[in-house]
Image (tube, rainbow, N blue to C red; front, top):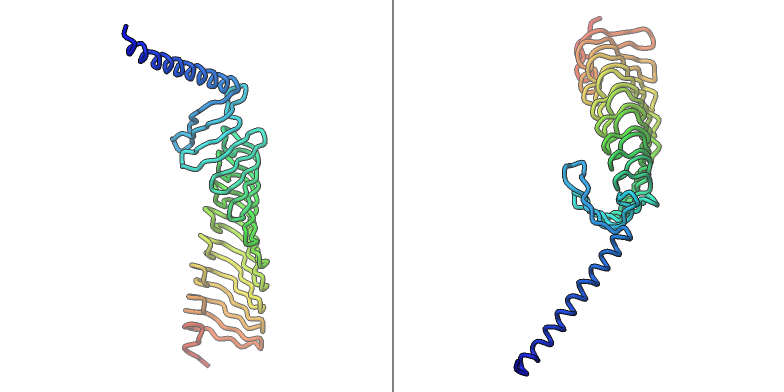
Length: 268
């Protein structure tokens, strides 16, 4: 063999030794990490995709501490031992978990300052809980998939309070609303609007008891003024419209037709 060939073969041999040594070292590192419990795991998510976990598993092989990328693209640092999840969007959760998802009792503090404490089911706000908004409003009651649902109490920062039924984040069903100015309503709601039978007491002492449609007095009802006058009959667009009877405290009364609260025909 010529000197030039022997000279070329030496670097190749050295390179081969280096590659082999690197491979062995990498294998040792991988084996050490594996023995320590370091894993990459794909976990089925409720939406049909996969959450990707990279970190330490426990003795049972379940994810314990590390980073997770959820199927919706959100990522987080998770520690099931402390029960803490720090999300990439700035939200922070402390509480019980199942498969690295919020499940059980816990508290989540949102980046915008809102705080929810209560029940979670597979990452969703579901069950009973208290949601405190950054503006000072507070809701206490039932939730389903992050929406107010069931019986609950909503208190506004100005002191107004609604207590009653909710569905899909809106007032639905029977409820009582007390405004900060002293007025109140007790009756039926549909999608945040007064709908059906109800009683509205105004801050000045006036009172209406009757039908509502689309948040306004509409149908039949009784409106009593604080001075003792009252009207019984048909309503539309928040005013007496149609047939009705208007009575005065001195005993006089008028029965007939009304348009926008005005008598349109007077009989002696």
